[in-house]
Image (cartoon, rainbow, N blue to C red; front, side):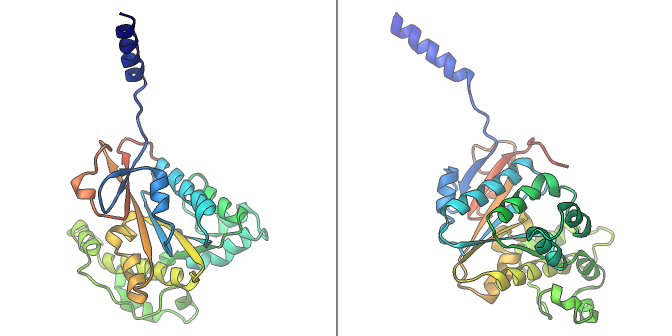
Length: 286
């Protein structure tokens, strides 16, 4: 009788405390659930790690910071951080801020920081600064991406020599058969002002790849933050990096939204080396 009561107690006790995980990591190759430590183990030999984020996902940004902190503890390489969220012509301002020459208020006012900088990216900038990690502004200035979106890649030839320092070397070739670019074309089909949107995406990808490669060394691990579309299927930025240097060991992480995160949905399989499923109803930062 006592044993039966104990079993019944345990059944209700454990049932009452059923957890609701905020995320679940899957290995991209085996599509199996793994834990955070197992994912970090898979990043050990990387030259470059891409974290493909959802820009407005609160758990996503927390996880980005945890990956950076873990790399700081486990990597035997010199860590460099890079991000889509900072444009190449703001590198000087970013450097001045990180070196303590200017105040944060001047940095956030004069650099083109995103509206969610303070909540979502400042913690990573601060952590990199505290640990004396270089932080690279990799993205193309938005005015040039807009120029391409309106008039195509050839319009970049009109830029001044000084302006061309902030973009990947011209001419830039685009493989329109990449699945991510095809998907973008399909999404934009029929939209007013679609213009050269794939070309605009390509100038971003090519420029981020260029500044990443300009800053990596044989002793470094570069950790890069970007929207998931820029590294999805190891295309976008990764495509341009591998085109320039096929020997680079690039590991990708990507976040996906799912109603149920116990299993990876079919459409999300194989998108990255490590896929992090987050509940669709997770709090958004904007």
